[in-house]
Image (cartoon, rainbow, N blue to C red):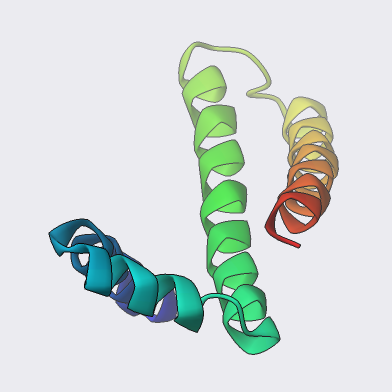
Length: 94
């Protein structure tokens, strides 16, 4: 639920930033605060984890990693890849 509402807020900010130069300046000013950066990092981190887990499920739909051992290994790989991407995202945001 939080992710759904967060994406709605991000889309509103995108719309406002694309509407005019003043709107862009307002959104840019809002996004310079550390709290806003932290919230955006949190939302995008959740989206990245969701994306990586979704790719895992697509791979499992192709018949790879459907055993119990394969599922455990796949979940560990998802966690490692997601953590690496989330850290890189944090470096990019800050």
